[in-house]
Amino acid sequence: MARIVMKFGGTSVANVERIRQAARHVKREVDAGNQVTVVVSAMSGKTNELVGWVNESSPLHDAREYDAVVASGEQITAGLMAIVLSDMGIPSRSFQGWQVPIHTDDSHGAARIVDIDPTELDKRMADGMVPVVTGFQGIAKSGRVTTLGRGGSDTSAVAVAAAVKADRCDIYTDVDGVYTTDPRIDPKAHRLNKIAFEEMLEMASLGAKVLMIRSVEMAMAHKVRLVVRSTFDDPEAPQVAPDGSPGVPGTLVCDEDEIMEKTIVSGVTLARAEAKITLRDVKDKPGVAAAVFGALADESIVVDMIVQNISDDGSVTDITFTVPDSEYDKSVKALEAARASGAIEYARVTGSKGGAKVSVVGVGMRNHAGVAAWRFKALADKGINIQLITTSEIKTSVLIDDEYAELAVRALHTYYGLDRRDA
Ligand code: ASP
Ligand code: MG
Image 1: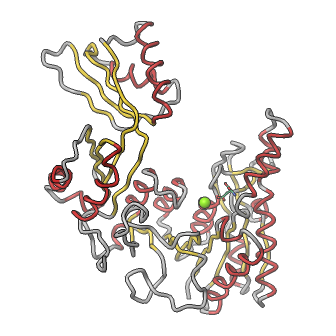
Image 2: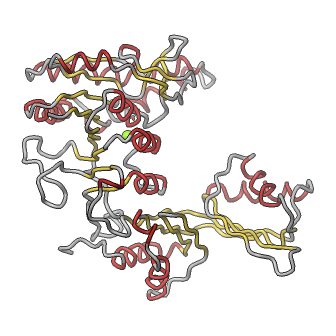
Image 3: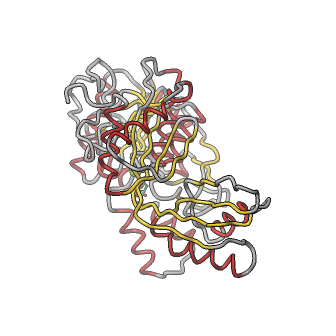
């Protein structure tokens, strides 16, 4: 017997028929003798509609009332799920955040979970019941309802799983797992059996939007094993892992130690619309980098890749970095303003929009010499010019011309042996 938290996203509970399909997955686990707590999102589109109503009522509104309104989407689906489960003969009841309770801080609209009392959920599960908890919401010390920020129900599910010490937190969504790269870019992409938390964090922040990043951070901190799987799979079909072996159909996101058959690289990701900015002949003295990136931070611009050259004689240097295309004009303005005010001294600023960042991610890269070298060869073989390179322990990224983006992804995917065996 296992204890499982099953989370259903917005498309999985988009209408009553889908809630019934989701409930059949719950029934399968309950029939297998497992203890289950369900966490639900609002019906897809519902939260947007609620946010729209709030803004229509007044663009300048009290954040506490915003939360009171937008938290209601999950209340509906939790109640409906409990009704459907009961109808299938599974004793169930709904719990809103405050009824669990899920304690959060008081940052309305972007609250953080502080603590979850597992007593009530433990008791219900021990009694053979399936509690259905509203995702996305909690209660502040003030007694007011809070929400966790958009996409927050993944985080709710992980927090509940940590609180009740679940063996697994299954995230049911509209994709059937995590792939080595976007299958729309490379049809040879394959679904991973397992991926390490750290890899998932890199993949998520690089644009593989299956899970909210905060939920992965929390899962890693509390060692909550996550499974990404599809609600639209036949709930009564035999349970088979992506590689065909008996197991959970989906990708397990887990501790590195749990991954036996380690590959060097687990995935290749692509982020487009990256602008490159270079400051030429920057006066080289302690504090220049702080001044440059401070000026951008003051404008809330998120900088990604950064390269600073060594200066020949120690007097001037070049600094190159990337920002999203949408922040390019604002960045250049901020840097020119900083020069005008004397905060930074440089000769000129140059740059261009429309770059593509291609990254390879894998915990196996940590102790493998030559990984970077192979990669550069893979790109060189295709005649792709690299503009910028950055590396971290488990990731290396290159900035290239967007024209070559998809070609680069496919080349690296093949190079690192990630192509589907039957492809
Ligand atoms: N319903 C909320 C949203 O749309 C939370 C979630 O679905 O994760 O952002
Ligand atoms: Mg989501």
